[in-house]
Image (tube, rainbow, N blue to C red; front, side, top):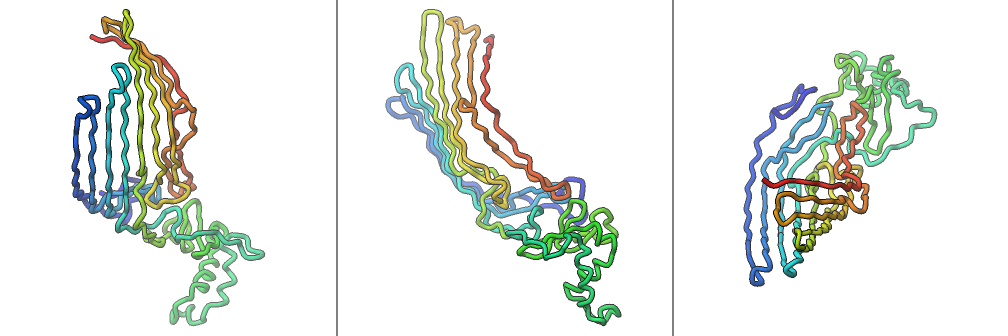
Length: 324
């Protein structure tokens, strides 16, 4: 199926994924064996890539056509008998080609909130006076109500008037009742009274957006120094890594933007001549970078808050092992 519990009403199965993949690569040994270099280029043309989002506390999958293209390279270079440089670099381009979806955190695609009218309370009861705009034929079923008339009639319900909030936006009103958002007046606790339509919202065209968690540029450089002694060997290593910025969701919202980050790791290791055991020490995230590498956006029914996933802070330690 195309969903996970809790709310599965009206949701259909998601379609299968079809990936057309082409990759070409080269593995080489150069400079009389001092340099090992591997390079590859690829393109993935997805028909119906499965993307997930949280709607009404349920995880649903939707299908999008996506293109992924990139090039990768990795190398190991012997600078001397005791000094080795290694690393990798990747450049990846992702683009959603054909996909529309309602953003559960912004159903009407508003770009800004507007102030409440003078004297307004923010409760739905503010719309009660609009009943005066109704054509009398509406009340005998001979005419369809205008939007203002509809709001005025709905606001006569004391339950809606007292418990439903609204916010003006540049794309129309948004209504809120016990957590959920809707573009029409509704009551969130009792789905039989006035539910929010399952199809509520304006579809956003995500064509041209990048895929979630898809950094364009990634690279790492590592330098290792080996020192041999009469009793054993030492290795000292430094790694520098960089990851480009990216978005956490296919909507490419600013609040889900992940900044780029650079990290430095250090390590050392001692192994005796017998190679029966080893001992080492390490420092990870040497600069103690404070970085969020992923955001998880919850549904509006629980406030639409956002969980951030952080990298580890500066960590140092020792390790020990035995070889059998």
